[in-house]
Length: 90
Image (cartoon, rainbow, N blue to C red; front, side):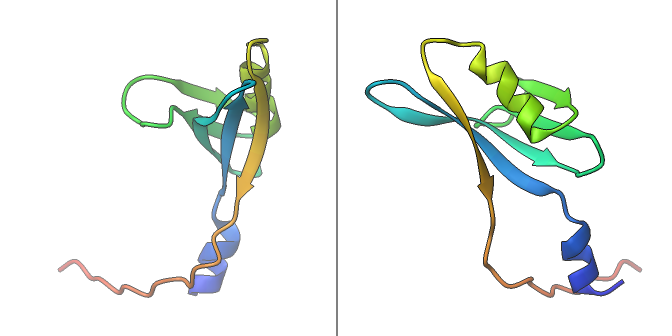
């Protein structure tokens, strides 16, 4: 498998951003695997928020329940080159 194939299979990174009248913040980070599964965690990681759902759009729904802040989905695309770091285990 070459690097381009790996990149093509990679899950898509997204953020759930919440905004009120004064401020905005990343409420969660997620990975959408494109096969009907998405995993979401709080912005700091760790043992706090964890959601398994069917898509990034469905994850957004959980945050839209809070009527004190508007929630929106942001897809994160990285324009960085794939780093080739070849390692082997012997």
